[in-house]
Image (cartoon, rainbow, N blue to C red; front, side, top):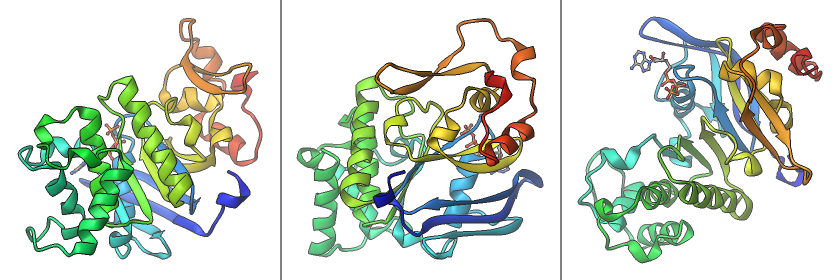
Length: 290
Ligand SMILES: Nc1ncnc2c1ncn2[C@@H]1O[C@H](COP(=O)(O)OP(=O)(O)OP(=O)(O)O)[C@@H](O)[C@H]1O
């Protein structure tokens, strides 16, 4: 990431492990995510991406180690975090107006609505303007497209004036244009407001232009690396469990694509996942690329 974006670490995990239903989901997570960065959380279904976000939010307790967020223990920084859960808007009352829905971000949902101050209403208005839904305040949530609903969910998270924004699969089920628009909103939040952003994502391609790094859940452990390290065919093939390639265009843009050839197990099984991770830790490229 550029030197001017570097700051104190926003999220620090130290030997962190977590269990759900008596089963360890992941363990021995040790990494630090810089303030002002945009980070993807990637891994296969059930690898524990949402679990990681919930641990950072203090909604789930660790079974070992520690997690600090914005220089506080997890759970103590909740007011400084905007969280957009997966498919959030589909679970709320679709008869709410967009304005009412976004205001929930400042007056809270836990103890029911309360009166809002002019300052809070101003924060909500600014959040709607920033996400491009300023003119939809009176519309019902049910009248909005999926893309606009996702923007409303982001506006609600922003209305509480967070320093850290966490989004769980914000691009899921959106058409290409809507995905681009959401990525554009995230890019502006990071660039113009210096917001630290974490995004759970299955498909990295759309987010690549704005990513500084990624947490990847591999082999039962979460790891963090800069995005150029993560963009490695061998690592991503292990991560996704299917052969993929990193392609670089003549303009220098990178993207991930499934291999055109039939999967060649012999090729990508040359190294175990832990060997791949170890090689990354030591800054070498993996033999699976050779
Ligand atoms: N309430 C729960 N009680 C027990 N186990 C749970 C609970 N919620 C999730 N799990 C388990 O924890 C593991 C991690 O779930 P999590 O939702 O964090 O994965 P994920 O990587 O976000 O998956 P996906 O990509 O499918 O959204 C899964 O195996 C899941 O079955």
